Length: 211
Image 1: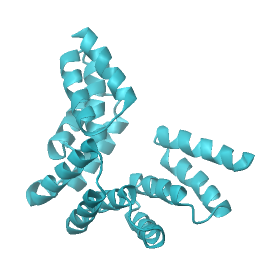
Image 2 (image 1 turned 180 degrees about the horizontal axis):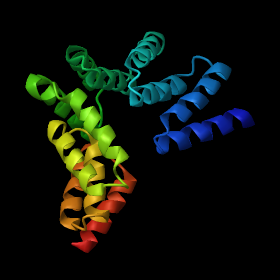
Image 3 (image 1 turned 45 degrees about the vertical axis):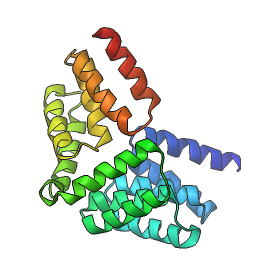
């Protein structure tokens, strides 16, 4: 990989970490033009398109990737997530089951099973689109109105307890703005029960020391 490719890759990853999805998409497109048909680039673009709710484009890219490279845990899981947030519950169920066939690690298996449980509850799953709106609004209020952001994230997590962003940001808001370290620690534990994340683990240690 040349110097320009490494530059594009660095800019893409930095943008993704900062949730600057449009910028990440721009640099991914540059890389995909220079290196077409690379699975890792297709996967990252799928993540970026999903984050921007470009569901039809994300679906097309993931199905093309599966047709070309075959099924894998991360491709099946991402396609299931696309359908989950798109509101296509039956397709999400199908692809989450395909992801389980790929034998995920215990935490990812638990997250997938939680999603399948939510999908069985039609009344609850019907709120997923509303949940996305709540999360987007809460994200915009994290600095300007943390109390309102916390209220919205709590509502979102009630609808969807598998929403890692909501659980993590609730913990951060309790710790940094509400100074309720016990509640912060409880939500950080919920995140770590579903995913491995060093930053969240660090925040949990910090919160536990302050209890």
